[in-house]
Length: 326
Image 1 (spheres, rainbow, N blue to C red):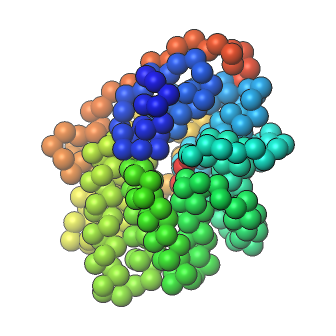
Image 2: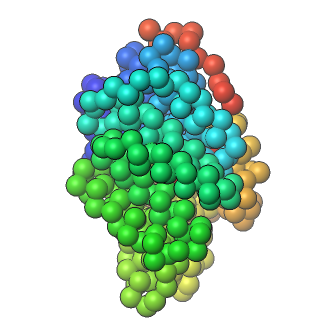
């Protein structure tokens, strides 16, 4: 799989691509981003762990913040905070020049926004706002950093009880993601906006939120983005009470599939996290979790081929999982 194909899978219109991991460190990181978006956390962790102490500071930083994102997605904010702090500490200069933020400036933005999301997840809103301001002060970090900035800003305003301030930030993130043609980021932005509209209230807002959330679930299932299926299905259960049981069964099925593909650390974090509902962890595998005929619980545990590492051989060691993905 070429570097261009991996970039399209990570940040373009093919987030469902089957990835083959090559030897180049940047390609390995891109593959891990794709795998994480598909909820294949074990395969992603195996790649990222090997990049954490890479000689290239940008690659090492991106690997740490990406692994932190994956830990955060299963509720491990404290573990993610250590990884995000390590990501920030690896960076020394401010060289930039990559359209998708695969550079020092983009890595610094990822680390700061990851730390902001970690603070948000542990109730430290003042710290989260300070870190958001630091990320914003970086300037033009490219479309991906701006989208992620919109996500975290929107979620902080929701947590602070300011849904009217949350909605514009989520709207801005969705516009930027659409302009970039990044399907995974479009879906995530739609979910954040749906949540903001739901909390804002009002008949019109809830109707739009339901339409957005239903569209996100459809897209996420179509492109195999299971980490978005389960939280958005739970949101739909609130917006569509007549079909709430079906939405919750789908959420449980998606989470079951994600955890089946996760490493032991991610599974332990999910089991102990207040962000992952106990009912989803104990309900077992539903018989009909998907809104489509082919159940995603029947997908194979993994579909990645990993080649032997080259320049980063022997350089990795594990440092140690909310939803701000790369």
